[in-house]
Image (cartoon, rainbow, N blue to C red; front, side, top):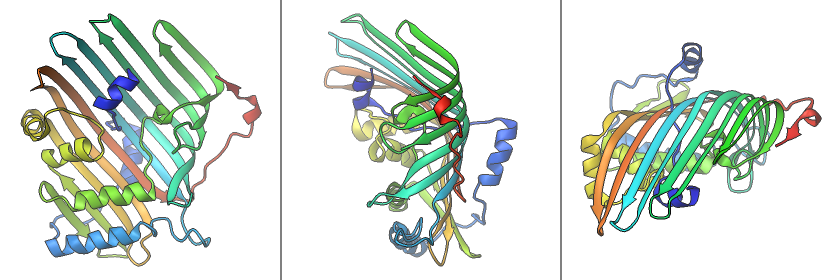
Length: 338
């Protein structure tokens, strides 16, 4: 399923609600005077600043005068499905990602290319499920991984992070189910967090892409104080282009015709990106995304094949500058490998 869906869809992560948790997120959000849209000249000036700030978001790696810590507060939920039929064969697959009340302290380290998330600790409740079937070959697969509890992780930006879990874990593969409660070490893939950690390079490129969009994007800039605060508000078309064309979170056949049909059918509420940084130095102080979009059904006919897609994205993800107080378990020897 993973290999098959990799060509068709790979999903980022997104969010929703819970009273105490939302209260925490309110403290993380970037607020400012976003009442007036920026002029073209102001946006062009901001693009130059963002480009220059790629090497400033976390300070100078040669000296000790730079930030390394970020606090993450995320709640996300994503569901995607696709089916393909060409008359002779049939494939259907679905994936769902959930990241509930994920709160992590993260330390970023310089690796020669930029600053990347390396260590993290905190708590959360996350899960990912996928399934697929092929009627022609009568093949079906199903898997699920769910974690809940206190988390410490190393190499979090790599493809194989190491996670120390003090809590509950559930793993389902086919007809085999493993449920454990205790202290465990898990060597997993990047999906184990069900969230994509930004780095200094990806942050700059994502912001530059959105700021350079010809249409569908409105930019608001509040630079009244020592910090510059920016809100990038996208319409449904810009949302689609970002997730499908740029990030390739979803691969959908049909090109521009598919985009037009998806935008028309989509229940789109928002896709807003926020960032704040110290105006004088470029040091990053906050970053966040809020997304609410759902497509219940999209049918595309191409090259004698019929494609059907559906997705739901709900995102509320916030990063805020912190002291990077990542806490490793004092009793790591007591953790068992799974």
